[in-house]
Length: 145
Ligand SMILES: [Zn+2]
Ligand SMILES: [Zn+2]
Figure: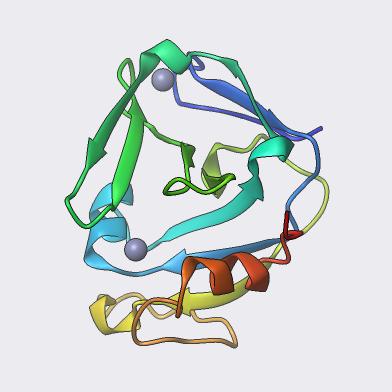
């Protein structure tokens, strides 16, 4: 059972099934969220996701557009957040504890916002965002509910 945690380990969670796919978003929000060229994230079903500790330590910042960054108020790490009213959870990959299986990047998104020094690309490159959250969920191979 994969587990993950924030820098200070106040916020901890587990997944029932290991995700196999992830994506990279190079938009200006994700760049600032991570402090680097892009975020690496995946989406799991809410049924697959369990908080183990620290939900009371999570603060939320949200834009009117819906872009949301939940973070540990003790250490500032970006932590998983529920996906816009859908029964899914967005999971930043870097929080996961070391895994034995490999994962495949299904796409690089919002490349019109990418920095010139950011040159890592997968087979699927989009200038903007995926067509919809549903199409992203499908591309990540997450079972529909
Ligand atoms: Zn923390
Ligand atoms: Zn983004």
